[in-house]
Amino acid sequence: VNSSTVACIVVAAGRGERLGAGRPKAFVEVGGRTPLEHVARTVALHTAIDHLVVVVPADLVGEARRMLDHAGLSERDGLTSTVVAGGDTRQASVAHGLTALADSDDIVLVHDAARCLMPGQVYERVVEAIRSGHSAAIPVLPVVDTMKRVSDGAVVGTVDRSELRVVQTPQGFRRGVLFAGHEAAIRRGDDAVTDDAGLVERLGIPVHVVDGDDRGLKITRPFDLAVAGALAVDPDVSAGLVDDEATS
Ligand code: C5P
Image 1 (spheres, rainbow, N blue to C red):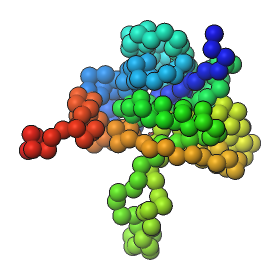
Image 2: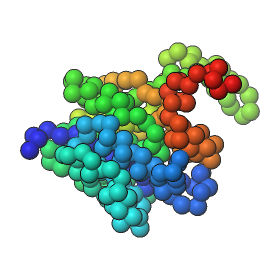
Image 3: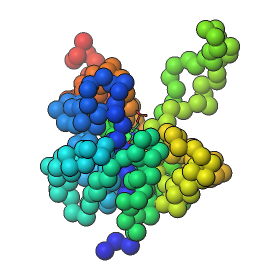
């Protein structure tokens, strides 16, 4: 038995209202598979994670369990999975996931099911950062667009984008640090924080950054679903491997 294990909490308990698909977005198909199936397969086949904790709406716990049992999880020894019901906010759903950790889960990743095409290398980069001594690590991307601050319909300033980053998940933590961040939030009365690293930053703990990946886009609106659907069918498109001349 491994004395120190890595868990990944996947939050999938959102209602997905902005997607307009009529059901929770973790259960809307993206290129023939649900986001939960994509995440489960990535974790099972392309990472060394030991424990997958999936957080879904209470009425979908049974369906999620069945889905995981058919998602290729059994293809890797040493991976266990747990399904728990979520809460009213993302923060509450993560907190429910924390209650399902095993005692040996020393490194904990928190991942949005909505970023279901994030490749396994990014999970591994985050785990490696924690193993190498960082208490918290998050995947980030550079900002490619010009950023402006706007108020009352007019520009009030241009932001220097060179110091900005777009934040993705999975975010990784030493277990105690993540618990401390969530406990401090509850003491402050915060109950709807959407960024786990932010909770840890508030404790004054440094958060390390690693390279994210465009394929980890968050499926939020119908446009994102269309993009992700195309990527899921042909991941090479997003990996930049497609020969422009061959496709034009
Ligand atoms: O709603 P939003 O896109 O910010 O959700 C981010 C992630 O958090 C999604 O994967 C969603 O399923 C999850 N979530 C949750 N419980 C909630 C709200 C959101 O697990 N109550």
